[in-house]
Figure 1 (spheres, rainbow, N blue to C red):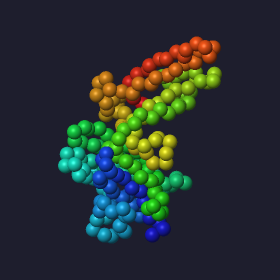
Figure 2: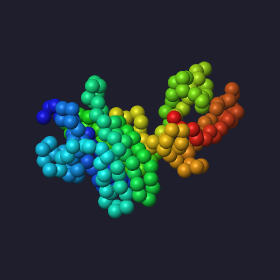
Figure 3: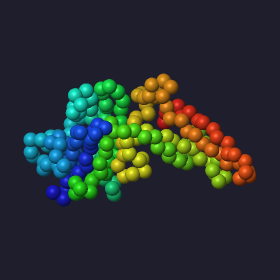
Figure 4: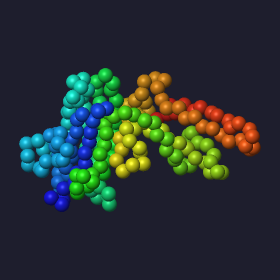
Length: 201
């Protein structure tokens, strides 16, 4: 049992659907029983995680297709790399990284098709083209549309590209960064600029 690793994936705004991934040696299984804790391998509800895996949301309108689920236990902190297509009233793709753990209670939880937020991440100077100066150093920023903070151990984000160089978002829909640049004197109002983040990376 100690050789098995676990992670939990929930789906939908209300988390109404959940599955467990179980990594047993080099074999990956999926438990679709919906229970709070995973079943042991060998039971009828625990099946080989052979992608694509189709799942139906309780709302009767939304379906999820797990395109890819690739574990990596070579790392000091084992993880599962996940790609899911969402189809229904809205259609898009999400991807994420989930922490695997020997105890289900300590494993990572990923939320697919949950409430979305825009997270801004600072990037190094080798990531142009949108960059600005901060304390004399060149910085660039990256926006991620996620259901969990990208700096947490487990996270899920909206795929920026439908295909190479083509945004997944409808035309005109993209994050906007609002930056206040301080002036030389405190008495002077800062200069505010809006930047449309319409490039994919």
